[in-house]
Length: 381
Image: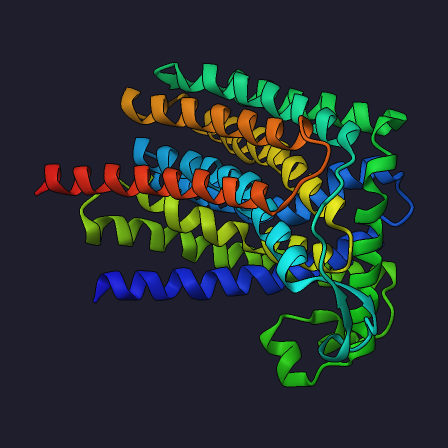
């Protein structure tokens, strides 16, 4: 019964996170409308898509304090990073290949004319840039997880990498690659207001702009209100998700590291997945795939760095996971990222064969995790 309840909470939390992040993204995009595209991509878009990972890690670390809480927090972010870089591009490729992109009638998706895409062209400059920063962040994380304890300056080091990434984009190097992301935010806001959802639908989807302001175009004041309320909802959902991760671990008799690696990682990745697939089906597949890499940089540097920095400043150093657990994460995270980036950068076009290759990688990863979890359950028994 406890296990079913935990699973139910995880499912509900993931749905709540998905809809609340939609509202957060719309409001934040309006507030950042005057930012340079590269800066907006590194701040507004990244925060909107990575808020669930950041909040879940914060709750796991601050609520449970011990090594298990830290292990679950890191596992959530690392598992989400693997999900983002493997599953999201895979689903985007499958979507444009088998479902097709909308080429006419975009106002009514049910009657839209679609065109199936056999080859996806990727803008390699932006992907290579984000890939370099992502691999750099992962190398630092690999080194940090090799220690027995984490201190404040380790969290600060991860945040510093993101600071360098931000400055790099703000100086103009990333402006070109974020144009589609800007369109996404604008389109999303426009679609939201033109649909005029019912009050019941607005409640169920946490459309605070419709509930409070009758769906009128955003102003600075209304955007801040919607942003604050969406953040509160995301926080509550992530708090319940963190609790459910611990409950499910207790019910299964395994460390919370495993349940976070599987359930929390998938639940916090849903907003990115839904938005990226929608982007791909609108023909913005280049941006959809590239954003999966860019958001991972934020997840690892800020999603782990900020909670660690805050926690260690308040409570002192925190113990790192066991050597066996960190060894797996260190090897798999870096290897998977390098292989996926290579698959995109070394090929002229991305085809459905690439998607099946990604599927094999993720099935292998999940098989290893479930085998490891089964071994832990047998050991506990």
